[in-house]
Amino acid sequence: MFGSPDYDVCAFGAHPDDIEIACGGTMAKLAAKNYKIALLALTQGELGTRGSKDLRAQEFATATKILGARMNKSLDIPDGQISNSQENRHKIIEQIRALRPRIVFVHHWQARHPDHQHASAVVKDAVFLAGLKNIDTGQAPWRPFKIIFYANRFEFTPSFIVDISSFFEKKMQALYAYSSQFHHPQQKSIELETAISHPSFLQNIETRAQQYGAYLGVTYGEPFLVREPLNIEDPLLLFDERNWVAIP
Image (cartoon, rainbow, N blue to C red; front, top):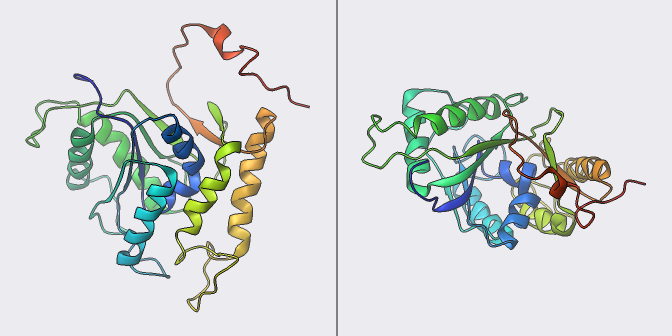
């Protein structure tokens, strides 16, 4: 890094709704702690079977407000064509240098959806390259302190889990904001059914959150991975009885 961060967190997703699905509870929890959060989608989701890019932009804005993030933005990388190209890296570098985040969240590199897999790679590379002063975007260089990877469909052994029990309902409210994409128990849609519009999809979201919450002895959790060892100044603080929940 060079100087002080402007944003605490910048979360990247391949499409509008990816961040909310994977780590919406964590974003809401961090926002409630007055951290400055930005949500960025690399595409506008224009290839989606349901809705339109304009509608998804409106839904993204609504979900951002529900989670308490400060801003959201969809880049113009074509949906279905995310690649780790120089052009795409530069688009992401420009956002990183403009927002100057301390931490970046992005998809884990193992994913069923090609866009999720490629988003992980291109954001990871852009985070490093954004700190090189000889890459000219007309902006000062900036390198975030850490990349944190969130889960896609495939599971991994997490580096840590965030207790989102108090923020799970807000996460679900943010998902319900995407009325074109997900099933809402109080709304009916005439659009074609997709895997994520089926009622079982949101039920699975809750089941996974319960699974990771159970590992902590709480109701709901979200898993994350960092590739590097964590520098812990005082390990005893991690096991302070005020922060520890006994698993039954």
